[in-house]
Length: 221
Image (cartoon, rainbow, N blue to C red; front, top):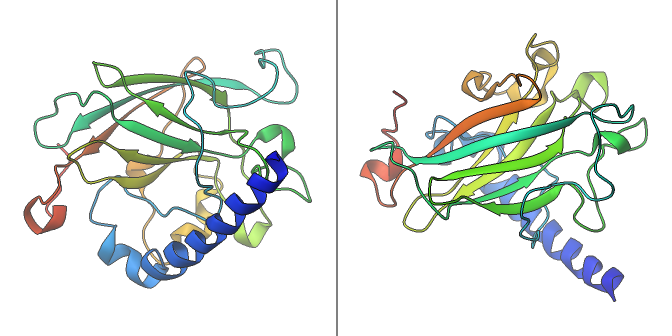
């Protein structure tokens, strides 16, 4: 039964992928339609519909310890704030997905096709905060199409314009130079983050719907 459900989810996801990534999120239109948000980033081709709500841990299977040879655990400490007032937005939703470093290899990019390993939604608390236990992503892909280590997000909240983003973990910018996402526009430097002591902190900003010019005057302060 789960296999049949996965099949239909994959079909719907592929349809959505075609509509979003090859039309409204195509390189030619992305800057105009979505690039006005300073934290926005392309969605990529690995998003999957209907990911489950999770409490704290993003990946499936046994808990990965810091001593593991297959992957490095990392704690995401995230907040979602009003872009105008900088006040916290409770009950914001973070739709998160990433590669599983345990499955990245010559014949696998590490994204789950069946099931929802390293995929899930998280809701912020009354202080707009949410901590997520996950695994340190790794770069993947052939040299000419290499992608920096990154984590995907769709950030949304009632009454606010949602947006898609990615956080990059590439302190030395070694892989950023070859990341194909930067072929048609400048690197989104504001999305580069560096974990400290196994923890990665970041604040996402949302602007109210129907803001002036649909939010094209967004500013970071």
